[in-house]
Image (tube, rainbow, N blue to C red; front, side, top):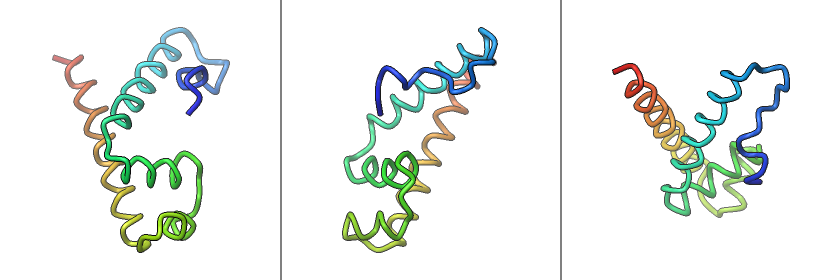
Length: 92
């Protein structure tokens, strides 16, 4: 992921508070992705960020398609948890 564009909102029509929230969310996601094992990070990157099909990811990594699904689900669950935890901390 290009670090210059990682925190740049795609919608230029966002107001200041929306852009700040976007940057914060992008930072949470980026930090969480850096803590993943290389296998999880690569699978998630290929399937979700580069938008390869699960079948293509399975072929590229020489793993079963079920493993691709499992890894992507594990990362999505982790990301949901990190985001929820961060915003719950603000509510307290």
